[in-house]
Image 1 (tube, helix red, strand yellow):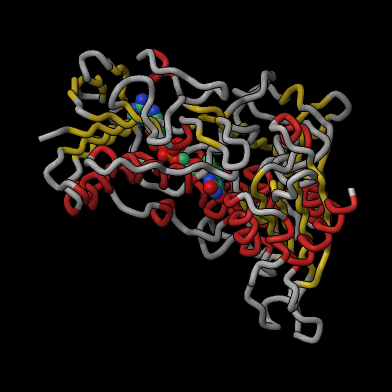
Image 2 (cartoon, rainbow, N blue to C red; image 1 turned 135 degrees about the horizontal axis):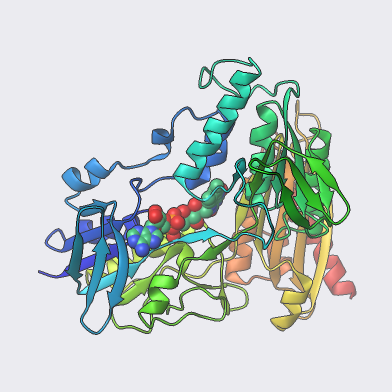
Length: 472
Ligand code: FAD
C-alpha cells in the first residue's frame, strides 16, 4: 500500500487528499495541518466580518470529522510539518503532544501563502490586523462586534450587520488597495466605520485595467470611503494601541488599521529541504506540479504556475488554481498523470454596488516584455436592452496584440448584478485559446433583453478594438 502525505489542509491539500482517496481507496492518505481549520473558504472572510455570514463554521465546506470518518483520510490537525527529507522520503511533524516521523511515497506541499507586511513601525500595536487566516477573521469580527456594541448599535452577532449604517464609529485605516483592502472597505463601512484606504501606487486594484481601477475607486469614494492614492504608509502611530496612520503627507487618526498589502508564498519548509524556487519566488513545479525532488509535488498559493498568454512562470495565488492543481496531483499520485493547466490570472471583486473582473495580460509593459505590442480600448455599453426595466452600464477594457490581433486580456466593471464578472468568462475563453479579436467579435454569445443587448458589451468592445488594431 502506498502512502500519500499532504502538508497543508486547505484548498490545494484537501482537494488532493480527497481525489487520491476517491481514485484509490487502498492508498493511505495522511494530511498534516498546523491549524485547527481545514477546507475553509478564506475568500468568505470579508463577508463574515461584514456580518452577511454569521459563523466561521459556515465557511468550512467539509469538516475534519467528515474527512476522517466519511473519506477515510488520516487528517492530523494541530500538526506542523517542520522538516522534509526527500532522500529518506520522510516528513517530521510536531504537535503539542508528539513528534511524528512519517514516511511517504508521494508528498504534496500545499502550505499556501502568508501576508507580506510593509517595513514600517507600529505593526505590532494593538488594533493592527491582517486578514490571512480564519483566526485573523475571527479577531476582526470580534473587533467589529465590540466596536458596534460599545456604540450601542446592536448586540454583536444579532442579525445581519450589513445594513449600511450611518457612519458612527471609527475612524479605521485600510492599508493596501488590492482586492482584500477593497472588500474590507465595504465590510467596515457596512458596520458604520469611517474608512480611510491608503494605496501606495496611483490606483487601486492595480492588476485590473486603469479604467476598472478608476471606476471602482470613484464608487468607493461615492460610498464615503476616503481613498488616498500615491500615499505610502510610513508608520502606524500609537503607544500601545494604534492611534493614527501616517504617510509622507498625511496623518490620519484611526482606532484600528487593517494591513492588506499582498501575500508571498510560504516556502521555508520546501527551501530547507532543497526544493527549488522559481523566478517568482514560489516553488517551481512542472506541468504535473512535480518539483525538482522526485515524487514531491507543490500546488496552490505556495507554488508558481504557467501563464496562459506568456507561457512563462507566474505567481497568481487564487482559490480555483489551488483546487484544480491539488485535484490534479491527487489524480497523478494514484496513477493517472494529470496536469492542472495554466492560469490566465482571472480574478473578480465586489465593492459595495459594483463588480469587477479581469483576465489575461493587461499591463502594457508586461505585454511588451512577453513580445507583444499591446493595443487597448475601453468601451461602455448598456447591460440590458434599452427598453428593458432597470439595467446599467458595463465598462469593458480589451487588450490585443497589434500584429496578430490575439486577445491578450480584458477587464470589466458593472453595477453589482449587471454581469461584468459573468461576461469575463467569454474573455477567459478567448485569452486561453489565443483567439484573435476579430474571432471574439464573432462569438455566438447568448442574447435576451433581460441580460444584454443583441451585441453584448463584450462583442462591442471586440468590434471597436478590432477596428483600432486594423487601423494601427
Ligand atoms: P491556504 O489556503 O493558505 O492553506 C495552506 C494551509 O497550509 C493552511 O491551512 C496552513 O495552516 C497550512 N500549513 C502551512 N504550513 C504548514 C506546515 N508546515 N505544516 C502543516 N500545515 C501547514 N481567492 C480567490 O480566488 N477569490 C477570492 O475572492 C479570494 N478571496 C480571498 C480573501 C481573503 C481574505 C484571503 C485571505 C484569501 C482569498 N483568496 C481568494 C485566496 C484563496 O483563499 C487562496 O488562493 C487559497 O486558499 C489557497 O489555497 P492553498 O491550499 O494553496 O493555501
